[in-house]
Length: 268
Image (cartoon, rainbow, N blue to C red; front, side, top):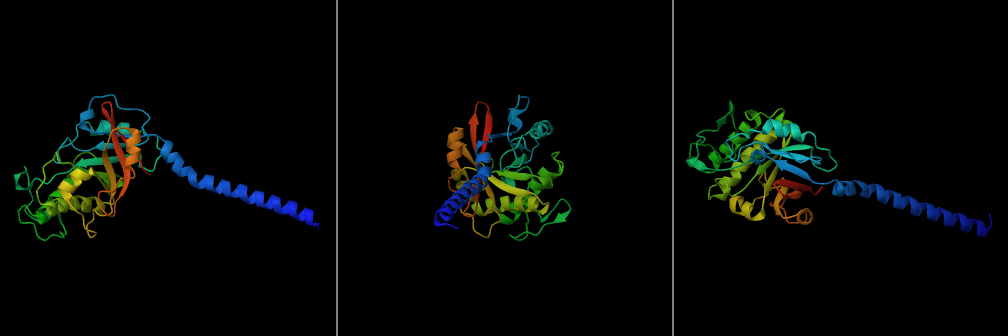
């Protein structure tokens, strides 16, 4: 083999390696590009009852309640039927659910007085609930509301969904952030017990006021985050880089409003 022939073959080999490297990089990058260009999803609930809902949404999130934690969205069935028409193309499930959360204490229309609900004695990490407004009964209140959401609102196969906990100051909350965290941990415990996933929807300011600093030992610490507060799709995309609500969380979804509907940008 002459030195010229060897040089030509070596050059062709290097060119082939370069082409293969570019192809591999394109394959690796393809899923992220597909997710970023698939388009937004929508979340709907009782305010959208009777309205013509958006079309061609990539994913949908449906509210189970009627604005309060102890109520049912009257359009839940119709909105779930619309949600299953989602076309996909992002890292989000085609259909997810969200629930209103609250911790009204003894001022609520119902407040637990034991560690039992739904025929089950609950393992309560905060001790025994005896009817007071502390963390133990707050945990049971959250557990009970999650039980109701999964069992009496009209949701079929509740364990198959991702359930977002809608945490906003417009609902009733204790001034005790530990009790509020216990409430949300109770909800998370119930959903986890039926095999469902859970996430947190809020803003940084509202979350801090309601839940405070979440310790690493909390079941809330590593949950995915859905951040509200963006004014457009571009700002929603920017919010994907915002700090998560908890130290171990990850921002996977951001929300913005356009017209009379909520739109959601997938960060994954």
